Amino acid sequence: MGEQMASKENVLIAIVAAAGEAGLDRAQLQKSVFLVGKEFDRELPSDFYQFQPYLYGPFAQGVYADIERLSDGPMIETFPGDDGRPFYRLAENNTDLHYSLSNTLESGVKNIVGWVSRMSSFYELVRAIYFLYPEQRENSVLQYSEKLAQEESLVRSFRDIAAGRTRSVDKLIAELPEQD
Image (cartoon, rainbow, N blue to C red; front, side):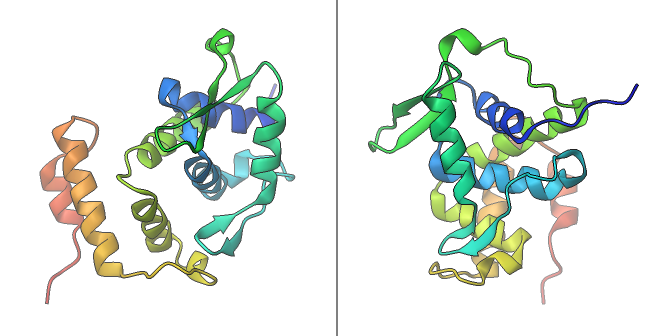
C-alpha cells in the first residue's frame, strides 16, 4: 500500500512545528514553504502553493491566508516577536501532532526550517534564496550581489560547523568557487 500524499495544510503545520518554541515570522514561513515546494514538489499535492517573484523574492498569498485560518483555531498560535511582528508556532497542546508526511518530506522540512531559522537577517535569507533560485530576483527591490550572498553563506556555514550542525570544514572549502 503506497503512502498517501500530504495535504498542503499538513505541510504548513509541519513547517511551523519544525521551528519549535521559537516559531517562524511571516517571511521565514513564506520562504520555508517556497523551499519545501521547490525541493519536494513530487511529494506535494497538486494544489500546493504557487509562488511568484515579488518585491522580496518568492511569494504566495495563500500561505498567509492559510496560516491565519489555522491560527484562528486550536492548531497554531500567533505571538508577537521582539519587534512586534507576528510569529507562528504550534499551540501548546499540539506538540505531539502527526502530520502524515513521508519520512523523506518530514526530514526535509526540518532541515529547511533549520536552515531558514539560522539566517542572521531577513536580507540574508532573501539573498540566499536569490542565489539558489535566480529567477526569483525578477521583481525584487532588494539589491543583490552574488559575492555578498556567497560571503554570507560562508559565514553561516562556519557558524553551523562551530555549532556541530553541518559538514566538515574540508568539505565546505572543497565547495567554494575557484578564485581568479
